[in-house]
Image: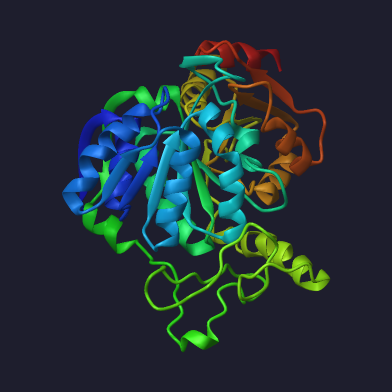
Length: 378
């Protein structure tokens, strides 16, 4: 299998991945530390017949990207935490109307303006529920430069498979890290692309939201002969608003089940030196790079057998595997660049309240020494 070696940053890799995955439209607004994604994709998309536009604000950016998704085009927007806050209402619209969209969030310190040029993992809880109401978010989190690319590619396939927004979490460290990355070949990436399902029957028989209870809507691209109704209101199989009790219940039930009953297609994790470990460390994103270095030092210099569980898919969470690990390990340490947003999910999944935590919210990354010191305390 051929590969490509490049020297670049995480933000540029995410932009290149979008184009390689068949994205044809970007709309957004520059926001540190995500701005390079917009810069790069604006150069690349016109070369393949796509389009990129800087909108007047974040709200207009996501609205335009949703509109492109309605037309059948693979669509992207990128921002940081405050931008997600502004996009929230329209992200709820995309969840309800089941419009596929990829949203890249390069996390920084917050809340509010926070630390615009510093690293954090403060948007993990936001990614689970970026807008009000009942739905199931899909969120993947890159932990290496290579994953800035591969997880963005995967996000586009997940968005078309499940017909909803899919979040890709990077963070300032990964977004601005500049180093060598080994990528799959362009041919391999393009071979992995699975287009969204479409209906090819008679127009009068078309019911875009008349899907099975564990399946997403089937939305044919607009302007190609099939008419249907988009609305943020509860709607029936034809897309038109309704308040009929059972129809409303089935709609929200389906928004959950289309994800929950197909977690095997979504879940992705890494387990590092867990086979013989005595201490379980849980971390994700750029923090996992320091965790791995700490694990090697703990084993080589301190005789402590630690191992890492790294969720790559954060939402829906790998709750079954977390429960299994909670039964196996007495000593568990959750490591996050926030106050413990994923810790709550670890506790829930493991059914335990005794999980230790190591957190940092001053905009600086973890050093391996930070982690080694905390593990020794255990």
